Length: 90
Image (cartoon, rainbow, N blue to C red; front, side, top):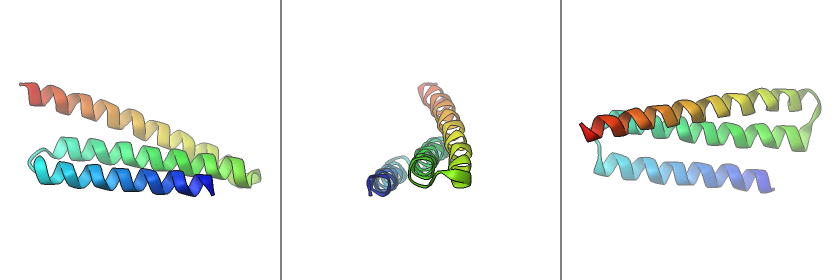
């Protein structure tokens, strides 16, 4: 129950952030891509933890892999966001 709430919360917050960025800064594709990577990373981490904790077994191993993909997505999103902020300051 708690994991599904985490996933739902991450998706709702990500969609709100994405639409607010699209409305205000629709010409900045880099920020939108970075937010997409961040949202994807958060959702994958939540799914990976849910599989690992609730299911276990082989799906738990898949959950670890999905968790690691989420961490990679978060790192990529943070790096893209830093580059976008640097480009905005120029």
